[in-house]
Picture 1 (cartoon, rainbow, N blue to C red):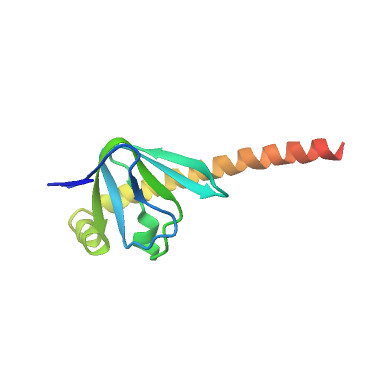
Picture 2 (picture 1 turned 90 degrees about the vertical axis):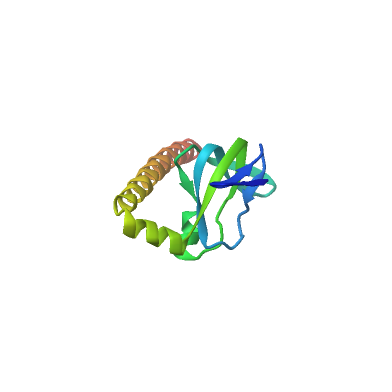
Length: 132
């Protein structure tokens, strides 16, 4: 990892944060890609691939919770760290930033709802076959 003028550069497959870690900041991807994934029973479960302009780690910033997932660079990536104080200052300076954040969170909720519907359908189909 090397520190740049505007953020921090991570090399390929470098872990940015791990699930269970504390943190009161989020990240904005300035360049590159970041994989978000869970670890369960020694297996990695991919959740999403974030790209330039995406943010991650916002739950720790907003809710003060432990990180619920892992994040690692996929190729070289540069990320900006944003703490709560700077985030609130930026929202005050540019209220449209808050709207863009809500848009992104709404998009993620929609994707999760679609995933839940697909999984529910698959589970019902599976259970239906077992009952036959």
